Length: 568
Image 1 (cartoon, rainbow, N blue to C red):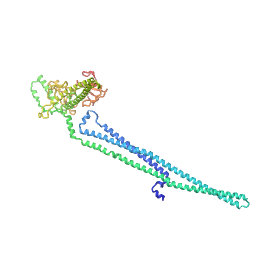
Image 2: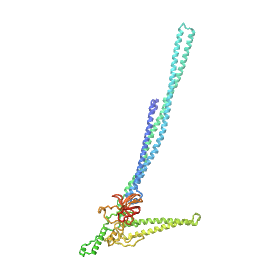
Image 3: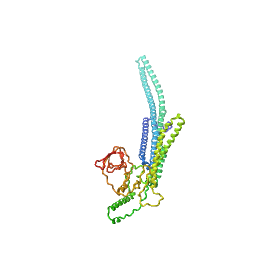
Image 4: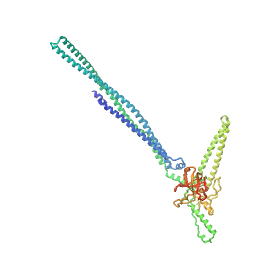
């Protein structure tokens, strides 16, 4: 009946105390193994998030002029959005790692300490009860042996008394003594029997309590402890899944953001942006006129005719070569002159307009500062205790000078802008010019405007002359605008010889086409000296060459070079 009442209680294993101890120890070790598993998963999430963040940071656009250029295109903006969303995606993996640590690892670590302490307490209580029942059993065995010993002694004393009483030769005194001894032994046996019986009853009661109350209670506590441990593992496993599930909505938003960014790419818009960025503003060249050289052959040969013929050839050659502007490759863009005359008309107009916008913003800032200081000065005048009005005057004077400088710059750039807009063809003009590079005589605008110049394929302006030297000047008016030539696939340029060396005094980034980046202290070969435009052409090796600012390098020309000299 007792067994039926206990049902599935661990009391059935009351004789398997040591096995239960091993089983509970294995359960603790298993919980520690699961904790280690979650900890390693958390470390993986942390490292993964770090790698994703580093990847996103690595491909973020750099803070330079190229970033502004890239922001014009939809596919570049989409990629930037993808990188930002990827960064947020990495943040969700960090959230997973943090939640695993706080909700599982920390809780299990604390629970493990409690579990070990509770298990130790229960088994200590069980060992104490086991020791107590074993001690009671030993005492019962001692009482039992004493009772047995006393009974044997009583039997021997009784037999000795009966023997003495039957012997006629024994005195009466000896018989009495044997009788008394037999009675004493019998009394001792009776007392031992009584003690044994009493302790046996006590032991049976303790044994019954031990096996049906004490041990079942201890085992029940161990069973509850084990069931709680198993339940805690189940809760942690559920939390393990929930931690991932909680970030899924945000991860989904990140992925949706990437998808939306990809869908926002507009190829036609980007291709139009390319046109807008690089259209030159030049009109297509007119028809090439027929030049009848046969008439020159019919004339009488003379120095004058030969000279005129040569001049005509040079002029026509310069024009025909200039008209092939779609194939021209500008190898020396560099930073360019202040008026952007090295750019095509449309690009120059955009640059000038952008510069004007910047100057107007700077003027507005200075004017705002001036207004604020003027108000402060008025307050000081009305309330001298707040400050000295004259202390503001130096700053007001400085701001006034800055505004004058900026306004002068605005007038200068407005003049250049007006010059460009006058030279650019009108969209409503239906007349097609027969030649693109015609002589244009415009008055100078500001102190830095170029003089009478003709539009050349690379955007600079040259004056067309009839003499040979003037033709050469038209071909290359300044080194920042290189001689018009075909692309490399049409005309391979031979490598220039080395005429000296130079040492870089300052670092130069060389972002523009035709320039070359140099580091401070770097030694380079000089292949073309400064022609007066502030640029020197250098070579690093057989494949790397370009222009650097002359003021950035110290040049050492070879003694046998034409016009050799050392300059900084």
